[in-house]
Length: 265
Ligand code: ADP
Image (cartoon, rainbow, N blue to C red; front, side):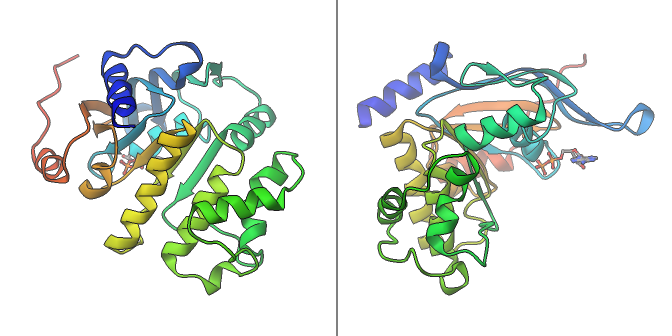
């Protein structure tokens, strides 16, 4: 396992992933909000390849473009310019229906606020993406996923009966139900205590190592980012740094260091 991860890191660093190995590809992605003098340039030309079986943390100050990057990469927002490919499929210009279909069948999402439906049981929440994707709900599959995230036997409960950490584990089981190629996680540990956060991060790590998914995680937390193979730092809509796995201390030190000044265009 350690060797596999080391190889993946090397491939990532070398940018040598090819074909279907490329879970996410962004080329020249720009996102501008508004026009003219008041336009906000949230992304100013992002080039990025995320291979399958990789865990990437996206960091940077508030307003640096992290959410916009995640939204554009997940097909939830459309870039003003540039190209986004998900597992080799160009999604720029795709119809909203096809995009929704692709998101439902190939992508998983985990949010800071869990986003479970309170009126559904845990099992129904887990099976929801599979139902929306048109599959037959497979209760045994849901039970296996719940066991995998440590919630064996909790399928009949409502989300409100569970702790925050347990609800986030339900959200991870839900993200895994369609065996997605990519899991997008937006501050998945933001509402959790340290111990529970570590459990949730281990589950995301396992999705990478055992299922070969690509995980892309926006986080402010150096401890969370230390679970990743690669740490990207955004500053003012550009990729300011692209670093290999490192300790939480080193990530915190990098966060405290201002990026080198951008060369004048
Ligand atoms: P981060 O996630 O790093 O905090 P965002 O991607 O949310 O950054 O925002 C990047 C920039 O784009 C910010 O200046 C923000 O104010 C702006 N922005 C984001 N969404 C919108 C929007 N819908 N309309 C106008 N400006 C936006």
